[in-house]
Image 1: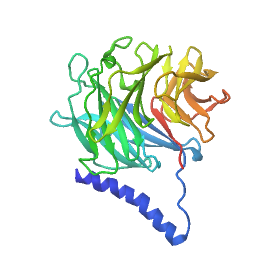
Image 2 (image 1 turned 180 degrees about the horizontal axis):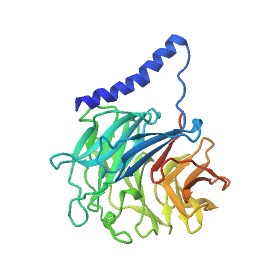
Image 3 (image 1 turned 90 degrees about the horizontal axis):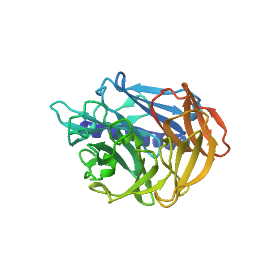
Image 4 (image 1 turned 135 degrees about the vertical axis):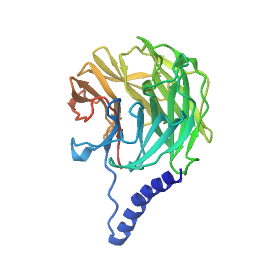
Length: 345
């Protein structure tokens, strides 16, 4: 475990100390971190692949294939540090001997990743019938506040969580929280199965953790709040909701003191907002949908404050600007990845 500590802090030192020394010697300020798109693709054949695209550099993506270190069956999610310099990959996997682990890998840019992992043991992953899962275990992983990151996943219809503290060394950097006995996550999905973690969004808002998801029958946007502490994320009882029937739902973002989410309803893309933390979602914009599907769950606010959502049609990707309903090409490299946006400095 000590090797990941060295690797992580070696990366931090190279990023934080060397540019500062160069700036002192030359009198030149450190360049700002540019805005980027970051993507993670989970594929049973190719394993896990991560990519990043610096917006200023145009449509070019830089990618890295993690299949040499990770089991092809396990899904992952990517979180980006607030300053945009480090990226962290979280995933659940079955280790040799049958133990289940939640692991974090630290990365710099697109190609440089630590060779060891920070991890914590988690309960065996089972389905709703109690059988061990042999396919993808989906986690949602997002920065919350300061050096703290939240991780959530569904196991046997129950909500599990962990907190990753990037400022600490293992084993104190990864804390497993209590399982939330919340039966709403045990509701069946159309066509079989149960609520998937792909439907969850995790954000920090109003000094609380906010978990937002779509009800299985797609008639409600639901929110559950929690406190953040030394023992993980503590979810309270119950959840709030607003009845909004929809076809697809984006990830939730925080902008200008409010939560925003995009929903495809019929042939229209609609933008909803709430400043009360999950209740009373109100429509603030709507535009004709340029395609039939919502892909990547990407919703973001650009430097001008305009809200944009990504869509695809027959492999052609678009971004829709809710400010004026204009669309433009959005060159994604991977067709099934989850994409997040980092605004840069």
